[in-house]
Each structure stands twice: as C-alpha cells, then as structure tokens.
Amino acid sequence: MPLSTTPKTLYSPRYWPTWLGIALLRCWAPLPWPLQYRIARILGMLANTFARRRRHIVNVNLRLCFPEWDEETRNGKVREVLFNNVLGLAEAANAYHRPTESFRDQVTIRGLQHLQLAHARGRGVILLGAHYSHLDFGGALVSLVCNPCAIYRPNNNALMDRYILQGRSRFMKSVILRSDMRGIARALKKNEVVWYPPDQDYGRKHSVFAPFFGVNAATITATSRLVKLNQSPVVAMSCYRQEHTDRYFLEFQPLTDAFPSGSDEQDARLINQALENCIRKSPTQYMWTHRRFKTQPEGRAMLYQ
Image 1: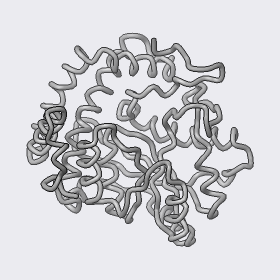
Image 2: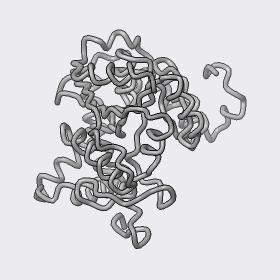
Image 3: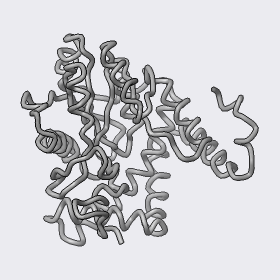
C-alpha cells in the first residue's frame, strides 16, 4: 500500500520522527554521489561520537574476528563500519527512489554463469547472502541479473516496515517472511531465486554452533533443510563497493559440492566459511552492528556488556 494511503494510526505523534526520517531519505536520494558521500562522512563521525552502544558492539565484534588488528587499526575500522552503515541509508534511498536500471553502469558482475547454471536446473536457487551495510542497494543490483525473492524480518516500527516493503517491491519479485518456511519452499519449487541470509544470531532454537571468523556462532540450520526439500542448488553472493567510489562488485560463487553434508554442524561450518570469504573482500562494509555472538553454548554470552 502506498504511503499516501497509510492508515490514520500511522500519523500519530509517535511516528512523526519516522516520517521525518523518511522525508530526509527522499531528499538524500536525488543528491549527487559526492554530496551523499560527504554527508555520510559527517553523520558517521557523529555516530562514532554519540552512538556509544553501537560503537561498542562493533568494537567487540572486530576484536573477536580480527585479533591481528592492533587497537589503533581496530578503532579506525570501527569508524569505517559506522560510516558505511550511515552511507547504507543513502544507498537504500537510492534503491528505493531511483530507477534500478540507472545503476547498471556502476556494477561489475563476476561469476554470473554460476547463477545461470544453477537456475537452469529448474529447482530454484538459494542465493546465500549476508547483511552488508548496503543491503538494499545490493538487492537492486541483483535484480539487474535475475528476478529475486527476498527473505524478510518485519521491522518493529510499522511505518518504517511499510516504507521498506514498498521500496523493496520496486526491485524484488516478492518478499517472504523469514518464518514462512512453506512460502520459501513454494518459491523454490517454482524455480525462483531466493535471497537467503543466515548470518544473524537467532538464538539456540533451530541453531547449531560453528566457527564464524574463528568465533563460536549460533548458526541456523534452515539452509540445508531447504536444500533437502527441493534439492535446490546454493550460490554464494557477495556485494561490495570500491572504496571512495560509487562502483560496486557483484560476485557469484557456487557453494562446495560437499553441501549438504548430512551433518548440521558441518553444514553450518561450510555456510559460515562461504560467508566469511565474501565478507573478507571488504570487511568494514559488513553490518558488524548486530550482536553476532550473543548466544554461546553455555548460554547468553557477556561479550557485549
């Protein structure tokens, strides 16, 4: 439903800050890239100063995952992560409000034949992705080469949820709730390409523990279950921006033939390794702002305290 026909309840004062944020994103999208970039730099510096909780989470994640970085290096990477998360808002606004075809000249695509061969098998494709800071813009770039469906977790803010869904519907064939496993299975049986990100901590239920950047991480087992339901091939997808430019790389790589292995733990290791290989191409463009390691075998970890 367009925002112009939004229910009256979403015009209540509690949503006024969200309306302001949406208006600012709409204003950000038409700006030239250099100006978008400069604004993000300023806001990123403010985030580094005032978003202390998020900065702390990023710092903990980077300390765990990149122990080879000294403190000075890590602090610089923390600033870059926060900047890229802010820039991701501008990139999302671009995806939501600009013609998708206008991005074609900004992207270099590698390994497309792997996606095409997988799709030609007629059993759908699980496009294994991760939560990059430019998540929505990456979805728009993927739509240049296929007609993808996206897995989605509703936003707690009803107005923002509506805005995001409306924006993604411009370049996604459909959006499927993360909890709707039957809907995902139906899409695969229709030979759809389903973008599936298994890289967040959803707790112990339906998860096993496997290394992610050498750290124990609760990893959902749904990916291998979906493969078994329809024998759908899995293709790993990475998307990253060339530093300081508006040029992007979109790369596809088939998951190892050893997947699924018959072991949930081994499958989780293979998935995390594939995602790690993608993220290492540009580590600070990953969304390190979420508590990836909050659940541990002994219970909820105190890592982020």
